[in-house]
Length: 251
Image 1 (tube, rainbow, N blue to C red):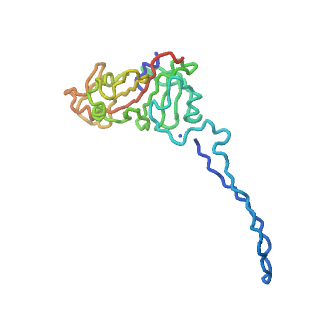
Image 2: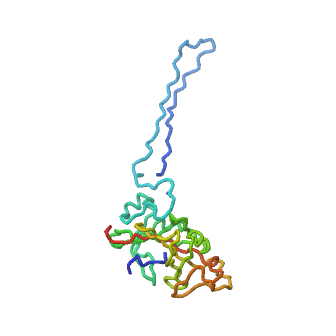
Image 3: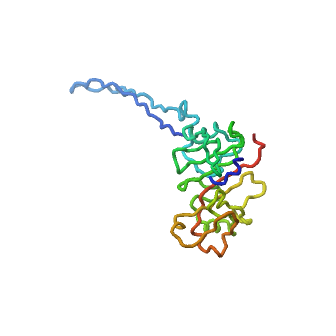
């Protein structure tokens, strides 16, 4: 399956080190002795600073990252650029990136040991890891967000307010469930000429597990203003973020 079809899914600042030279102490002058009129002052070693960047730190990540998608990510971003952006320890090449219907793909996992920053990167050429096509965030506690303001855990009602218009989405409880299918021309809709497509997928939240009210499910399309599901705005939340870079001209 083409990864594009997947819908489920810190400049280390080196402190300046002051090197102060120790001065030798001279014996104290006898009590009757009169100090010289112009006794020389003890010499001190000039204060020096170490370089701001030391050898081996040229690929260290910036001190602060905004963790906004797409951010610095682009179709021509590969493993080398990712290591420079995020640090080598935070870039893991894996053959087991999850896909729909149990499929697995070769790609990159960012921050593999940190659920709050973990992201899955899929490529058009999965063997050479060329042509970044999809960046997917699935962790409920993720700090990533889209540059249009959409974030993990945002309730459907809030998403609708942000969009300014009703939202259409596929029913839940199947592999492609909860995917936003139409922003109805709202503020979150893709703009003409934008090379990046921003996606969100809905899922049931903790409130839904105890609520008696129904929510849209199954292989059908639903709308956020469907009066058959009056509580869906509070029962459904963003459960996945994704940006995609369509096309194959960057291979």
